[in-house]
Length: 79
Image 1: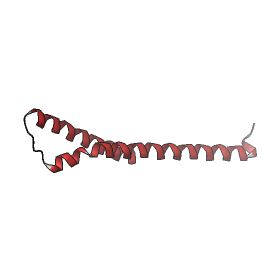
Image 2 (image 1 turned 60 degrees about the vertical axis):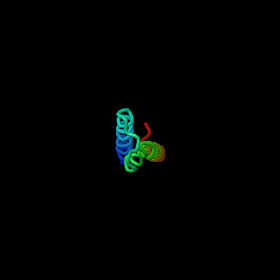
Image 3 (image 1 turned 120 degrees about the vertical axis):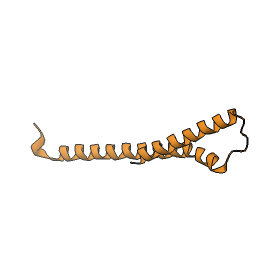
Image 4 (image 1 turned 90 degrees about the horizontal axis):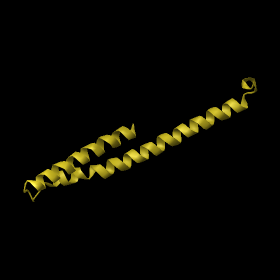
């Protein structure tokens, strides 16, 4: 779930950066504060996504280790 949230925040931030670039190219200089703050969602979304990936990887490796330990401790599962 955090990975999806991070991707959404990153996409919104990148869209805001594109809008800022287009506005600067068209001659606008005083951009609204909310647009500049929205552009800051790109690095925030990247960070949230990276934390989400790390948490998911850790969770899956723990589940795999737990499943392996359960299989090794069960004497009936050995051939």
